[in-house]
Length: 184
Image (tube, rainbow, N blue to C red; front, top):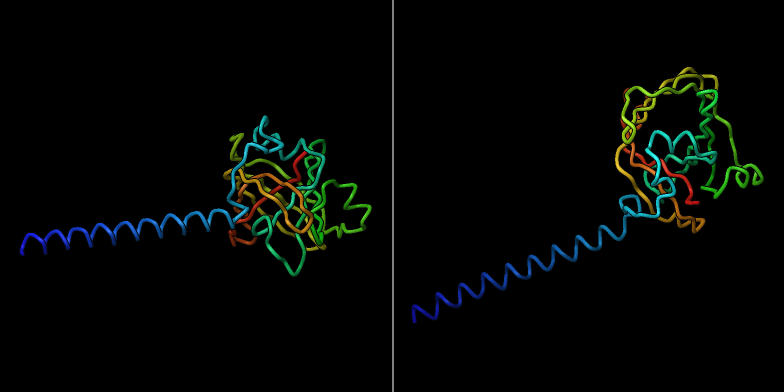
């Protein structure tokens, strides 16, 4: 009788533990498939360049947002880097476009200002970009610290994008963001 009780307790513990692990596995699968900003992919259009090179050599817009499919009421910040002059023009756009010319043609480039940029460290894969100038005639400076690669689909335009997780520090208020550009 004592042996049967011990066996029943052991089987109950094993069954409970198995159900717990199964529930954790399903929860993990659901959360990772619903979050496009955390998906890594080998479809990164800048996979053969360091982050530092990719950001300034691409003639397209780089979009900064809370996540790839974040719904913003004030628009998405779009950055256009000019490597020759070490400047970055910041626009506010209503959505992401495949090319800069498409955004221009749609008349959806609300220019906020042009800033001078420089790199605050020598890291090629996790650079820190320092930007200073005026946005909407207000002096400002910000830093953008590049972290890990991200890729996914911007669902509003069915557009594959890739880029980097970043930490944007504006007025000593750091915020996690993504900085992505359309796949080529």
